[in-house]
Image 1 (cartoon, protein in one colour):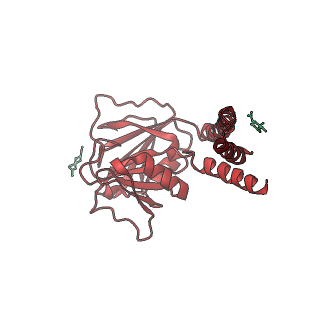
Image 2: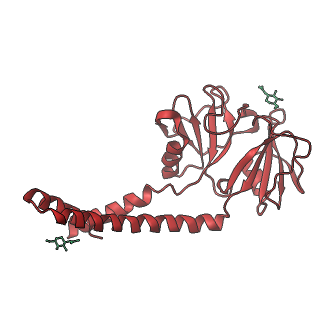
Image 3: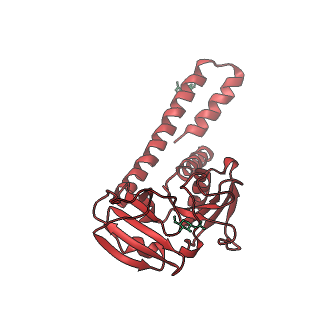
Amino acid sequence: MTKSLAVSLYLIALSLTSIPVSSYTFIGCTDIHKYKPQPNDPKAHYAGGTSAGCATYCSSLGTPYFYNQYNTGTCYCSSVSPSANQYTNGSGDQAGCEGSDYEIYAMKDHIKSFKLEGCYTTITTSQNPGSKPTLEACFASCPSSKSVIFSPNSDTNTFDCKCDPSANINSPGGGTTTCGEYGWFAYSRSFSDRRMEDKRRLDKQMVLDQHVEECQEEEEEANGTLSDLTKVVVETVIDLCFV
Ligand SMILES: *[C@@H]1O[C@H](CO)[C@@H](O)[C@H](O)[C@H]1NC(C)=O
Ligand SMILES: *[C@@H]1O[C@H](CO)[C@@H](O)[C@H](O)[C@H]1NC(C)=O
């Protein structure tokens, strides 16, 4: 039983680590000239350039950002967010960045509870923190706002920063534009950080419940047809499922 207990604990650990605990937020595009990965940045490849694969990999390593080159499937986990002058123009996430440009995503707390609503030419808000050196500083200056809006200014290498207590994006007479330098990236909060925590806990519980349920079903199924061969299978299943 010691061995099966070990197997069970291993399975629990496995199911906990394989849950996509992290949501991730698109924060822009950069290119191979403006962005060079740090020498020790973890690197991976995902067929089809899927950002979900890159997110799962980097979230297991705990890095707050990742850079995903959609057309080659190359993924870099990073602790560095883009500076304003690293931005290139692109229509949005999931292959929206041009050619061999990288999609950049944040998994950092606070930023990751926001979702990109679109990019705009003009935005009106009630709170205007103004020019900030980093994206983090912009989001940090709007701690309880339901929307946060920034514009990368490559001349000054700073982010113009606005926010609002409402989640509605107010773009009078403006219109949507391609995301990139000088455009306004508009985000609204999709989950509170508190609700993210609750959801994460619920996801874990669901996976555990599901695991136990699957095991009972497998056990019953295996018991139905008891040849010598299936006996071994049954025992293995019971062993693996001992929780
Ligand atoms: C990116 O778009 C902005 C405005 O939408 C424009 O001013 C800028 O010149 C564009 N940059 C490039 C490199 O095309
Ligand atoms: C399957 O069979 C074994 C031994 O024959 C028994 O101990 C076990 O309780 C059975 N499991 C189920 C789910 O029927």
